[in-house]
Amino acid sequence: MDNNTNNNNTFGTPQDFKDLHEEKKSHAFWYWVIGLLLLVLFGWYAYSAGWFTKFTQGGQNDIAQNTQQEQEDRQNQENPFGDENLAPISSVRIDTSDTFPVRKTLVVKGNLPDSCTYLNSPQVIRDGNTFYVNLTTRREGEQCAQTLKPYELPVELEVLGLPAGVYTLVINGKSTQFELEQDNKIVVPDEEQK
Image 1 (cartoon, rainbow, N blue to C red):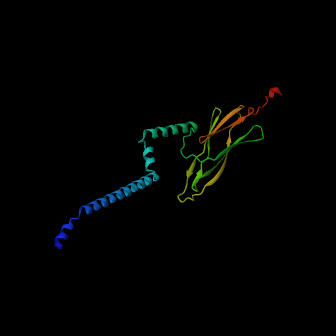
Image 2: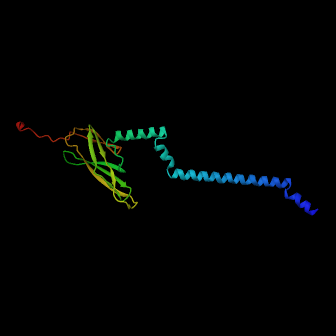
Image 3: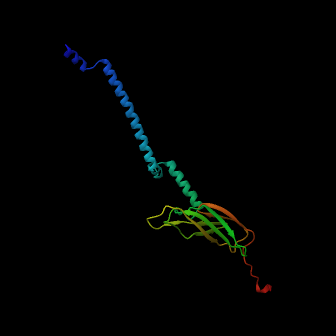
């Protein structure tokens, strides 16, 4: 009879089935928690690896594409050169000579990102009362020290012969103004007036 009793218990009692069901529910809960954590970790990795920005910059998102196009248009208006390797600029100032005719020198300061980045010669054009200055960088070398490299660059502005007035200077999208208080021309008296 003891054998018969043991046989009946191999299928388990209703309480055993209930306990087994609760245990499976508990396991299912933890599977969901672990799955959710893995999903969050994968999303964080994808975001930090730049997967989402590549998607929006690739033209798949119309809003991001329009915004990027508007920014490029605005930059091209401010910088007619349209170059992408613009030098980082922390400050600009305009020095004025004490002599006549007046000389204006733009002094640009900034930090290059590493030891392999160099400044190109600045490009300057004048359109009416606006000077556009384009200061770009180039990369040379492969093994670069990741330290900031400060620079200070003087750029002569061609102001000889300009009339008095306020002039705007736009350098890599940053703008400032300066004033010529009088016509910056050398007047040579005619020989007949002597």
